[in-house]
Image (cartoon, rainbow, N blue to C red; front, top):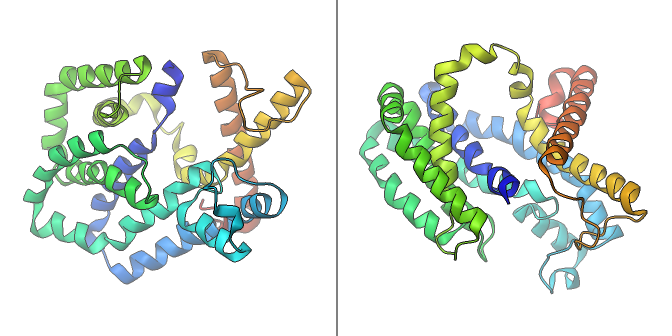
Length: 304
């Protein structure tokens, strides 16, 4: 339960960082150029790297957890719905969701430049997200509503960096208490709603940002390459998660993992660390090779 509480819904951090970087880099914002760049470096790699998963889950086997009526549709409809929801590969729901934020970029720019008082809506929005949760019948729309206050929080943090840093430095014990309360809720299985991951991860996002700002010298440039290729890691890591799981389950049980939980890998902290380390090493290695082969075109194919 501890590993699940810490690792699950870490997309909250990703959206906080996305909002932070959007505001930080917004001085020369031009919507047409912005969309063109996102199409080239996010949407195009998403389409290309989706091809293996789309082939597997439309031609070779059925994706577990899809709607009952999904595989009654025509092939092109299945592919279209997969791409619109990102359900063909677990982490890829992120792309249809963040694409909605790309489309709303002019509104975010207007808020940041003309109506920064709207940032005061973040606390009630966070409470709403904590109550609604991440999942719902409308897929990316539900996730976008859930993650909107985190994205805005990242923007607000960047908009007023010094004030934000001083506030986190002053109130970090309260933020840590909220994070621990949220973790207790997740680990203890408290009734939902509320959904405890949101206050937990949001508080930790603020604390981690402050810690990285204060102690960035400790890390130096040792993690720069991983940061540089982080989007590429996101795009392809799920393939390695599945491949390593298939191999591990086959070695342990002599059967192919079928996704039903009948032959799960035993969960423990050392196993999780080894598993995560293998995924990172494999993905970074493949990305390094791809960048060497593809050169400047690598971002349009693998997102890095």
